[in-house]
Image (cartoon, rainbow, N blue to C red; front, side, top):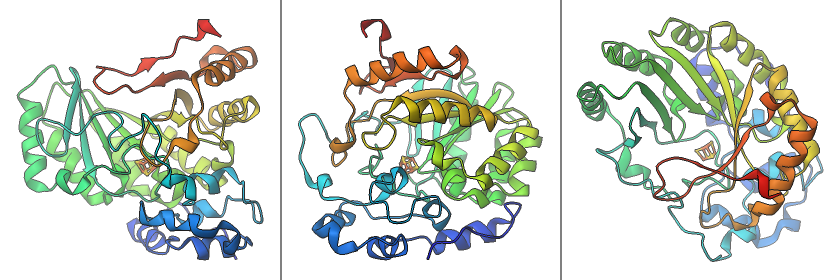
Length: 340
Ligand code: SF4
């Protein structure tokens, strides 16, 4: 039986770490708790061997019991389609594995991306990094010192992006050390955190995290990853309100996924729900063509039609930009909507 966690989101590191330790790792256990028969999913569940399943109970609690097509379940359940080999789909769809040093990517002149933590609290089946060699990109004390030196030597860099994995897998005391270490760089203006962790584990928005971001010497931007309005659960919304009150700019990037959010009603509800929660829709990504995720792809014509409908039904500031990452391109490529 899946129940929503009853403790306050104003917990401490221990609470979210304990919840993470208790996350579902067995598809059979997850399906049984959702009142679904694992036997009906057959050998497809063996796709967990391609990429392990990991689903926090707080995220599973937002799934509809008895619904095999639940849009949140579809994002995390291993299925047989992952074994299909599809043209154009490969292990590194956006060609990001080379950086100036392990764990640091410097694709754009003014910002660097630090892979602060290699793990995630959830394994999304469409993840573009599902084959990423995280073990070669671990960031420890030595790598942090190197990254600091690298950024100090290039005054064009004004923004530090924390990514991963998920950077909020780092404990609050580790994040505090990072903020303290990098706060002596006068050319840094912004700290940007790309994270899905509050969405799947709202207890991660601890008081310590909120205070740390409120007191950081830079503007702080948090780019969340919320794909479906059902992910906007009350605990998350309450946590976002605390981040917003602390001065954090909240943006969202979603991935357009077949069978999850490829309907105009869903995308409109997502945009409205995000705004109600103090978050602005930022990007809607076409799927990165990673091996094992072809069944999630929505073609460009359909994506354009969905964007046209959002433009009709939403104020312009609630319509995300439709983009695709193309390997070798310096920035995300906007999809031209005039061709609809
Ligand atoms: S949260 Fe992001 S990085 Fe982590 S598995 Fe999902 S898509 Fe990948």
